[in-house]
Amino acid sequence: MSTTATPFDAVDEAGPKHDRTSAILGMWIFLGTEVLFFGGMFSAYAVYRYAYPQAFIAGSDELNLWSGGAMTAILLLGSLFIANAEGRARRIAEVEENYKDHDRTKQFRNSELTKPNGILWRLIITAVLGLLFLSLEFFEYGELISKSYFPGAGFDFGEFAETPLGGRTSEMFFVLFFCMTGVHALHMFIGIFLVSLCGIWHLRSRATSDYVDKLINVALYWHFVDIIWVFLYPLFYLVN
Amino acid sequence: MEIGVRHSRILYLTFSTLIGLLALTIAGHFLSSGRIGLIIALVIASGKAVLIAVIFMDLRRSDNVSRIVATGGLVWLGILLSLVLADYQSRGYEEVSSNGLKEAEHVTAYDRVEVEE
Image 1 (cartoon, each protein chain N blue to C red):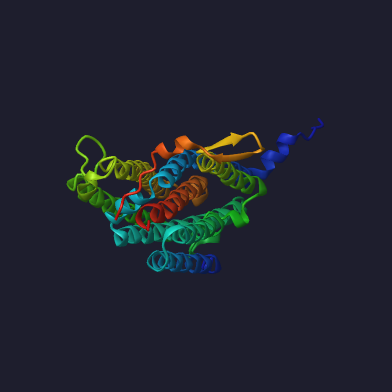
Image 2 (image 1 turned 90 degrees about the vertical axis):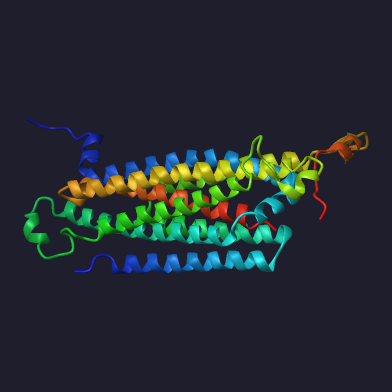
């Protein structure tokens, strides 16, 4: 019986590598839509900062520059840890896939390919750094709310209350601050949840190649959220 | 066997550069002001974003389609921001008969509020 080769055979032969490329492409397309999601808010920021430059300076003066800097450093450190975990997992998975027809136990005995391979604790540190970031952010929210800077009926911007719009232009700064950093915080919550899930997948799976595609995509998401903050920090904390 | 020592070294180097750029951002805030300060901050932030995308997000080793999608996201954002800002920059002008624009009189009522120091 003769068999005819079809394009699908080539896809099947490509195996895990093909799956990985497709998964990563899918994540990049999702991140492309996220750029536009945040892009709308960045446009609103540009418009209001163009219209009310002084109000943005006054609003920014009320934020803690050093706390924001520390939050940026914490996020960058988290990115380092998850990039390290992901790179490690990717290389282990590639070796596993290359040796899938051989006796895995013999190949991997006494090597760093066996657990513990340092992936789990890197994921735990990433999640803890994410929680630390959120703690600092919510502490700052608490301080701003206690000073009546939360937008709404109770908003009171003290010395600027006598200005033409009664401090309402600075209120716009805080509307954008709470909206943009709030949506970013929501992404952080999702990121921490996903990183924790990766830790669970790591513990449950027998081989790294079982969950490496998910870990690569979670790492991409985490880095993207990091990039958003890299822009939010100077736009809100460093206005002069 | 140590796995990916070289890869880890690149990551640590990138992280150090990012922290250096963060310090530069804060220094730039104290040393510059106004439009220049904003431009410096945004240029440094863009540099940080490129480093994160290329090294941490592994764009340097990604396939071309992923790179196109990543670039596409930036292009769409660029279109959005440039058209919105072009709109706001060009407000307050009206056409005159001799092929040109002049500042519209009604713009004195434009709701731009400057807080006096």
